[in-house]
Image (tube, rainbow, N blue to C red):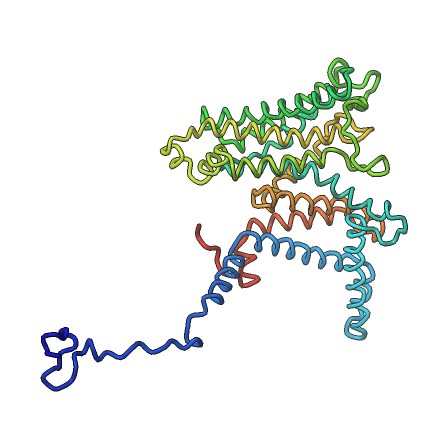
Amino acid sequence: MSDTGKSDAEKPQPDGSASSTATTEAAPETDPHDAPDTRGDRSRSLLREIASGDVLAGVLAVFLAIFVGSVMIAATDDTVRETASYLTARPSDFFTAVWEAISGAYSAMFRGAIFNYNLTEPAQQWRPLTETLKFAAPLILGGLGVGLAFRAGLFNIGGRGQMLIAGGVAGWVGFQLDLPLAIHLPLAILLGMVAGALWGGIAGVLKARTGAHEVIVTIMLNYVAYYLLFYALTKEWLLKTPGSVNPKSPPMKESAQLPKVLGDQFNLHLGFVLALLAVAVVWWVLNRATFGYRIRAVGENPHAARAAGIDVGRTYIVVMMVAGSLLGLAGINQVLGTVTSGVSLDLDAAIGFDAITVALLGRSRPLGILAAGLLFGAFKAGGFTMQTSENISVDLVLVVQSLIVLFLAAPPLVRAIFRLPAQEAK
């Protein structure tokens, strides 16, 4: 075969060697041990994402708060203080006392919030869990109202006022009207939610039309709602119990009470089911509906959202109305929840402010708020058992809740303590 039949690459070179292209050695086979461990890289990337995310920081904030609370439990225990006086002589007594104080407190909280293993009847053993769910329902609803506003970049500090107004309206419908159950209860819930929505909408309108800061407006509306309810509780044609000197309404009529879902032996009522439905609806709105996209866009950057054609002012108004209706439903839960309940000035039971903590701990995500509401419901239910059986002040539970907020407000501190990587920019 002539040289002309060969390609340039195959022609001999002047030194007798073949072309460099032709003589290039085949690429050596890759050693499987030298190949990049893509699976390991993905695992490390996932672990880093978890470590630098919000969820782990929230869990560790709760852990730190419980740890500090444990130190306070031990420090206030009489036996621990007594054994500390001879710590160097018999250290075992001191550490035993510390362990008994802390384990006794939290085991009492478990018995009061989840399962009472000291009892024998199954219904009574699981009764604490139903109490936790009952306490959690208004916290979840309130947390959803606050968290939804957070997602739109709004600070809804007016949860108390929205609960008072909605609870007052629902209470008036609940004991002033005589209607069948199929109409009475839904009407009381509906009108109460409308009242809460309108009260929250006031802050939304002022924010959208005048630029008034929603924090100041909602705080002031709390006072307005409080004194409006106080006035209503002094008038028999509104909310006052006839012949009574106490500012409290009569109990709700049976047709307007939230029915119990597990029978009369438990206090858990329909309010918890409504809370679960609200979680599902808010999750769907935020993650599947167009309005949820607008909420998230406005919350991320209102100027960019406005440039994209989103009516920011209208979004503020609607968000505050929806948030007010959710917090209003929390107030309705308090008024219509039990047989002896009625409207009073303390119907919000500090839930309006606890809802802020629940929303913060849940990172303003519906499922996170659900988990945070259950946790705080357990704190409330178990705190009473901890106080009665271990003689520990129930205020210590409030200290733990406050510490959770403190650590949530300082994520760099939590990350520094546990040596977590910095949060990745989104």
